[in-house]
Image (cartoon, rainbow, N blue to C red; front, side, top):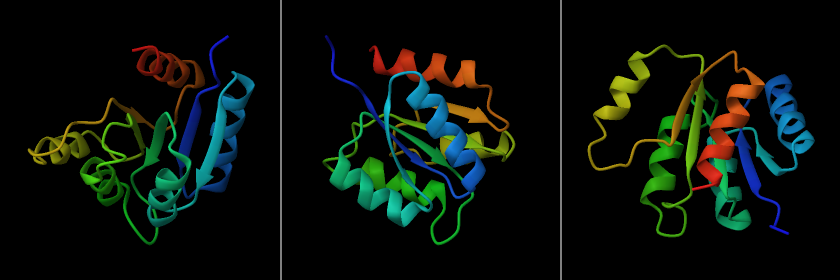
Length: 127
């Protein structure tokens, strides 16, 4: 039997955070969560998740800055990240300009369809 995969959810909107936790836990994943980028970075270091679901617009530290921290940290850089955002496609252009960083494994626009989210997560974690 395979071990349960752990997903770190970094999301400042409590209702969306609880929703993501329920979707993942109901489908056999373990979750840990953070409400801002700073807490999310610290949790990633201590929890070593298999995947990170990261919001873009958050207080204290943006998801983009947090993503850059993940990808520049030796112990975290290989953890796949899915970015969820209410920001339009111009965000993808901004990511493309970060030439020295690998692009996220997925970018999903809010509102998130749970089946689409699970499909992307399972696809990434099965690689």
